[in-house]
Image 1 (spheres, rainbow, N blue to C red):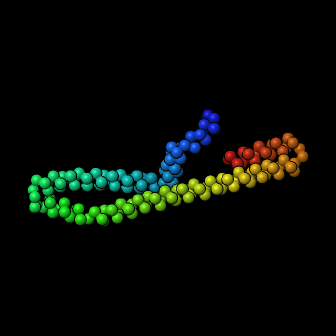
Image 2 (image 1 turned 180 degrees about the vertical axis):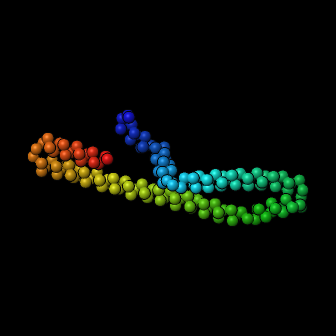
Image 3 (image 1 turned 30 degrees about the vertical axis):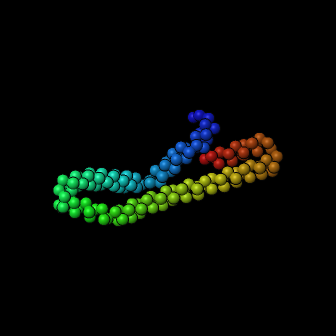
Length: 149
C-alpha cells in the first residue's frame, strides 16, 4: 500500500536506481544463483587464503634472507601482470553481464511504453467513436486494466 507518488519519489533518487538495478541483476540470475554465488564464495575464499599465505611468506622472507621464501616472494612479485590481466578479464565479464541486464530492462521499458501509448490511442478512439457514454467508460476501464495487467 501507500501513495504511488512516494514510490515514484524513491525511484527518482540514485539509491533507488542502484537498488532497482541490483534487483534486476539478482533476478537475471534465475536458475544459476547457486553457481554464481558459489563461484563468488570460492573466489573470496581463495583470495583470503592467498592474502594470508602472502603475509606468511613475507614474514619468512624477512626472517631468512636468501632462502626459499625470499625466492618465492621474488617470483610472486614478477607475476603481477598476469594477476592484473586476470582481474581485468573478471571485471569485463562482470560488466558484460550487467550490460545484458540493463539491455533487457531497457527493451522491456520500450515495450511497456509502446503498450501505454497504444492504450491511450485506443482510449481516444473509444471516446470519439462510441456514442454510449456508459459503454465507453466501461471499455476505458478495461483498457486501463489491460495496460496494468
